[in-house]
Amino acid sequence: MTNLLQIIEEKSAATGYKCGLSLIQICVATNISISSLKPLLNELHAAGKIKVREGINQKLIFPIIDKNNA
Image (cartoon, rainbow, N blue to C red; front, top):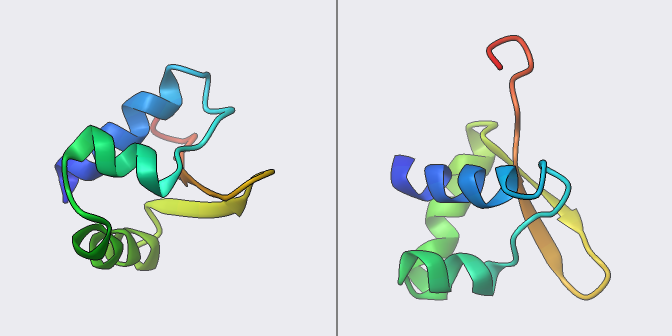
């Protein structure tokens, strides 16, 4: 699960944390199916590691950045 969070953080950092990732983008990057990925994302969300925002066409996943440790 930390590998999943690391991928989300790296992809988001490449855009200056301005762009989130879609579920499909995460599936392609991790090579995990949507049905297997959703429970992992739910755990990360419950732990306060990621947030989900509504994009123009779909929901986007962003890492939560702790500015105190950055």
